[in-house]
Picture 1: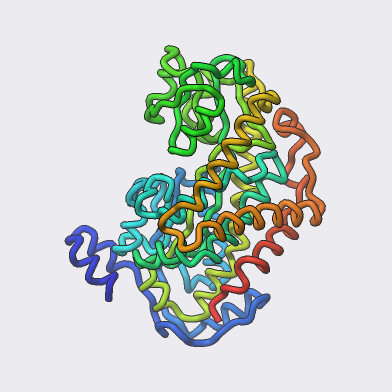
Picture 2 (picture 1 turned 180 degrees about the vertical axis):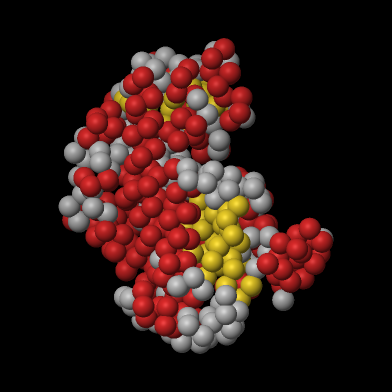
Length: 418
């Protein structure tokens, strides 16, 4: 009912789109499917359900690496449902841009999408605290991609205030706190030490990023992503703190190929959260809910294997093409950034949105350490650094299946629709 009223209030244009979403057959309930069920068992459970059409969007163009994880996920759900569940995908965030995605899912323009709380810290203060705590994540090329896409989800689901921030907006939280790769400093000239960064202008995208720039003795500034290329080219800014994906797509590597990623001193990593319209979710047949939940294994796999690592390969090749390389911070800069990162994490204890900030800080430290151990125990290693990754990596080099299975069984299985 909430979704229907929102669609009506939004006007005729949106109403027409909302009318196409639908859940045929049973609304909630119906046959249940056990975890580990086969494709045939899911199809059998959904045999009597009517067609289910779900609206979503992808951040990238159709077939692009930037939206591959969305396309892989929806394809898997459609296949496993025998075509009972289909998706109408709008590409390049055509329905709602970054700061509007949560509203679009709440009011029914989208049934499912990826909410970027980094752009709305006042509306999602608890989730933003978790995002800032992401400085704890391993930043290395292989183990970092795995560790950093596991522990934040575990903490998010276990923190009632985070879940409530989404529920209060009518959003069902499905995949919280995932990232599409680490942040880096892309600079016009080589810079790794405190002396190198002293007084240099560095564009940032968050308050915590500003604290990190200050730790490096630089001066933080805000420059629109679309203007960063010219700002770097003209020397208006000396470095930009962005992801390798954003730097590559925006052409920043051409004018700022000297890249800093330190495995032991992380920059703030932008994260996203996959959510579902709660009214739509509650009206889905139980087997459909379970299928959407179980195929989160495909979502996690695609984030790492189909986005982060291919983007890393492409970025490193361009960095080298334009005369740069990926370097860690020098010892003095690393120590300064680590001190500030500890301060950023400790500051989350005072976040008013959290009922027990001290317990939250303990939980993020414990979870980050736990998943570093798990990734190592599963046998994953950094066989090369970022500079060598482009030549070393092929999809066959790293089997992520055992990692994905562990993430699902530890984090998602306990919350599977019963």
